[in-house]
Length: 486
Length: 95
Image (tube, rainbow over all chains, first blue to last red; front, side, top):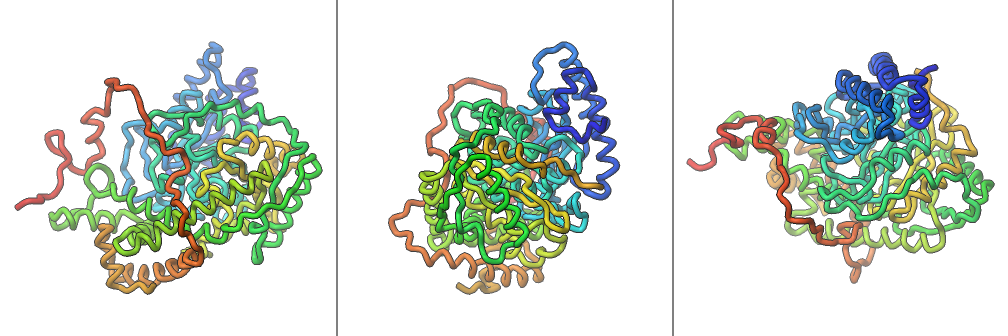
């Protein structure tokens, strides 16, 4: 039995029945990492020693039958944007290369408390800025389905590590599609919860009104298990929502009779890949056969979303990233002994090209004379985008769209042209601007064998319907069981 | 709106970035292109539309006034590039 092929619920069952141990499973994943990592490069740091130690502790808990959760003893990976106590956390940036956090992010703490074993820290676009993981200061990540293709981004390492079976599940963050788009590119399930559903404490900030953490898994059941462990109010994050967390597994009934699935015409556009469109349309038919009703809806301000996002996100980023000044942590470049010079040289050397570009854009749109025309205008249009969803959800329970306009593109193809790269996120961005939950799940493959993703968007705090619909689709298809050969 | 090299230098100064000549030229062109794209937003009349800056209800987060342990000084300083006598050390500011 290859333990690395299992889902969370599959491995958990075997651990509970004493068919294997967490130490044995952890060793299998560490071996798998050693084998495929030279090709995939999904990790920045592998924490073998710590992983084996917590696996041993998990085995003791299982032996005693005390405090066991579905995650006890399950090896997972964590995007290198989450602070991990005493484990290097870089955000894939030179400016944080040697940073050792003195505390755990809330999400990591909760996953550890649930008994999960952390195998290491996933590669990503520097400060989560990118759609291809090519902006990592250390190395790109390669798509396990085709090594000359990107895994998507910014959580490309987290998506690729699940696809390549280097871990059972992983966590990432999604500011404009950074969980859903790589999940689509790598043929795995990626869930972005409602903004505020999961604590952002200890998660390195990019755009604070949009950032949200979520899981990458091999199926929908695993996504529900991960969300159960991650969700909930946190006094350390004043934007986390005080709302009961349901057991998300109770939504996995497969029953979608009478469910109204909204199809927005703005997401089936000229110029999108024909194979992607065909796979998604076929997926809609599957939902219809399962008893759901397809209803046309309209999200008229969709074409403005990318513009709004690149003003709002960069404005917030320019402010958030002001903290990297060579004083409190990270890199310091000090040649002349002048404070201002030290700030400027540290930041120029420590940040990569895309991060500097976004800091520049954000600083510009917030600067005197431009604030009204750019940042304020974008925040007003954001209201219109949010209103579009409120209006659409009056006539449907869930919205179905493609996750991305194309399957995974080739490395190097879009690096020279920031605007084309930004347009990779055209279908995922509106969800963050509106703060609603969304999921991407595998719904087919192109002729070249690249995965295609179906995106489902739900009402605020209605992850339940998102998971219910995803599970019904998954139960009728087999795309999610396919694994790349590497 | 056209972006000049002078604008880029001004913004780089505000953002505390010592850009190289090559970066200044590159960003002048790229910011121009991105800003022309977002110009699209001006097509919309947003008079009377309130801006959205957060999607969660903007409530004040109250908590009990209880003494809890905070980060120890040595932990807070552990990542400092330079520290001395329990403080972060920076280049001299006042002559």
